[in-house]
Length: 385
Ligand SMILES: *[C@@H]1O[C@H](CO)[C@@H](O)[C@H](O)[C@H]1NC(C)=O
Ligand SMILES: *[C@@H]1O[C@H](CO)[C@@H](O)[C@H](O)[C@H]1NC(C)=O
Ligand SMILES: *[C@@H]1O[C@H](CO)[C@@H](O)[C@H](O)[C@H]1NC(C)=O
Ligand SMILES: *[C@@H]1O[C@H](CO)[C@@H](O)[C@H](O)[C@H]1NC(C)=O
Ligand SMILES: *[C@@H]1O[C@H](CO)[C@@H](O)[C@H](O)[C@H]1NC(C)=O
Ligand SMILES: *[C@@H]1O[C@H](CO)[C@@H](O)[C@H](O)[C@H]1NC(C)=O
Ligand SMILES: *[C@@H]1O[C@H](CO)[C@@H](O)[C@H](O)[C@H]1NC(C)=O
Ligand SMILES: *[C@@H]1O[C@H](CO)[C@@H](O)[C@H](O)[C@H]1NC(C)=O
Ligand SMILES: *[C@@H]1O[C@H](CO)[C@@H](O)[C@H](O)[C@H]1NC(C)=O
Image (cartoon, rainbow, N blue to C red):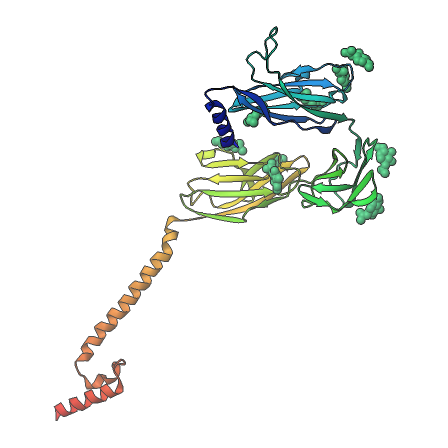
């Protein structure tokens, strides 16, 4: 896209610096919105020189006249974000829509040098592109209150005064679509078998209207804290990281770490000794211990997560190995080799005298075959004779 635009710009410029009239490459799109929603419209234009973009609004009332919109208009509900690099882009955002924001939103572009001249009328007029925004009254959705415990809990949503047709409804939890209990077009329910950390979350009932209607039921539990690994180990002098996670809703607002000393949790404060560092988010906390100490650091650590409903905790064990410990397997192999070498050496030492023939010690040379022994004996006997 960028390169294409650069190319277009180069072509427009290359025509001997000739100017090119403004043209739209993106126009705003008409849409339907609910009150209190926000709307976003985009407009892009090319030309040489780069055209200026303006936004104008004309209300739905027949006697209303077009007014120009600027960044900060309508008590700061209007925001305009424009860029003029290679070509012009402009986005307008209108927040907290009211019924009388319905109307025509017009993007105007021009690069005529006289475009803003008050008395001269420009040879080339502003080019225009329009979108209609229709704001309709947001229907009221009533939901069952938030849930914090129980089993077979039926949550439900109910629409009143829907101004548009309801084509259906369903439930969403995160990215997962849930099967709704079909009953009436303007009422839907969902059964939660058991309220626990797995079923906790935000349940959205969605009514298929234009635009979509959404209600939310919150299912909240206290933090379900688990250790990422029940025990961690590190070498003396290295850095050890202990991690706890919470996989329940709502997220943890406060994480604390403790070291269990004689069964009593002692708080671990961030930054202590310049060795203990705590990094926490809504779902996880990490306790990082640098230069692990063989005497002081091993033991049991506890993480404690708190939210509006209570707290949950988990214990992580930390083992620290001596630097030498890493050497043990190596030393073991060295020792083994030494023992073997010694055995072979001793054996060889003992074998040497046996080379000298000795009648009384005939059986002590197991490596020699009986035949060889026999031959030896014969030779010796002959020699003796
Ligand atoms: C437009 O007409 C309405 C009635 O249709 C009137 O109440 C309003 O004051 C008029 N606005 C202007 C700007 O003339
Ligand atoms: C929109 O309305 C909400 C609540 O009524 C308010 O907090 C917010 O500041 C408003 N935003 C703007 C841009 O006016
Ligand atoms: C304006 O648009 C630019 C580029 O599209 C974007 O990076 C920036 O965040 C926007 N600013 C605002 C206030 O929306
Ligand atoms: C738009 O509607 C609001 C209430 O929804 C009203 O207070 C305001 O005066 C209206 N503005 C115009 C220009 O009619
Ligand atoms: C829907 O809500 C309205 C008012 O909030 C109530 O009167 C009505 O009984 C509800 N309908 C159902 C099916 O719950
Ligand atoms: C469907 O909703 C009705 C009440 O509206 C309830 O009695 C029934 O148990 C629900 N069924 C399921 C499967 O949730
Ligand atoms: C711990 O201290 C470090 C800086 O020493 C800081 O970046 C970090 O946010 C602190 N963590 C907490 C949980 O306060
Ligand atoms: C918590 O984890 C969920 C997914 O498990 C993620 O969607 C959410 O953004 C996380 N919240 C925070 C505060 O990190
Ligand atoms: C967990 O932390 C909270 C404060 O956030 C504290 O009130 C509570 O006593 C702690 N729990 C334990 C077991 O230490």
